[in-house]
Length: 301
Image (cartoon, rainbow, N blue to C red):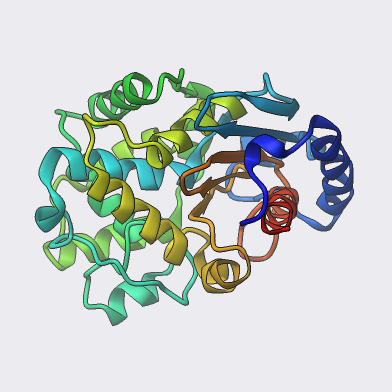
């Protein structure tokens, strides 16, 4: 890398935001969560947070949004810290999938063993391991741990949770039934409730960047090995079917969410958080990917 995140000027970032806002016109809002479908498509925010904590943030930085699938690497990180890697990887794999993130077929091919923690079958399995008597308690435990470790202010968006629950997610229900059938999980109702709740943990673009820094600048109290494990799986699995191509072109550990947020990590430098609701065919934010690719080109120059 020739450049550093700290060398990126506000003027350059502003130019990329203008270009990214035009790219968003090619995307679509998700249609299976009513509240997300009602989101203003022109929302756009970015936060670059180097390890020196010198924030460079622009756009709709006060807008809150649900993390959705971006919670998955942090669910993995939390459980690795609580239960250890041997236990966790007896429950889920670490291999990429060429199937969509909510694929039942992939789970059946793998005989009920989730391919990785970044797809729904893997994350639902990990949600079954969260401590707590019910979904609310399990989500709260993860929320409080992340807020403490990353100095962020995640909260449960109850309206978004209600919207998620308003339409039965047929694919997730099928995945859940397959996991029960294969004796991968018990307490399916509590597990699915916990999964839905953690996906509705919400914050601002700055909160998301602070979460990312947790995995870049691993504190002495947390395992460096666990940080490396999570970053590796984000690189190979974080953008679903688009992961391999993105890893070759950009190489940053990255995770997307259906809300339009994407988190990218620049090892030894910092975190990049982007938010723009319109998605491409794989379910990744078009504008967010555009900005991250521009930053990657800048760093390589």
